[in-house]
Image (cartoon, rainbow, N blue to C red):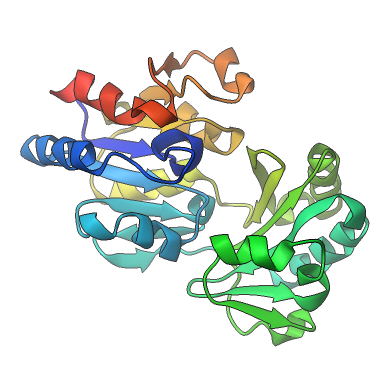
Length: 269
């Protein structure tokens, strides 16, 4: 098997449930990959600052796909950004208001370096407290007109009826947005050209790598396009059951037991 890139989702894939990972084992993997002229790609729905915090001890040793593909950091430079149109943001807010009683975490509008949240959304349940644990530098605003930066991703967590919410957003906005989920009620809304596969294609083309030379790991439906794009797709043992309907390899261990790193070592060591 000839590999040049290995990409991995983070939550419920590379990261344990407590958001940590086996750092010594990861460094071992990175060292072997470097010797073989291979590169590691983080491919996540998390925002860029969160990724940089997780991997602060590994600066310069990986590439990054953030916000489900809305943002790419290649060789230390952020590029290939794609934002959601301001008119779509207004519509998303209007639709979300109809799901007020089901919202667990209110709408968060993520830019490159900061996140905006309407005060009306922040007031829902424990939204601001929960969002503060995930997003850095949250700016509370009265109206969307106060947003002064391109929005790369709109996120919310909806209990029980996330599928209905996603269908309504798709029905109303059509090809103006791409709607996806990482599971557990989390919904991300991005530019229609955004998914992890398109972002990984950008990196692969930039590095002169073919799809058949890429291995990718994922656990959720927001990983599906990426897994279908690469030549060596691997679903986590703990994946959404929908992924098991595809002809993907499956890890022997789950995310809490270094499933990704062990699989990589079994292939490249």
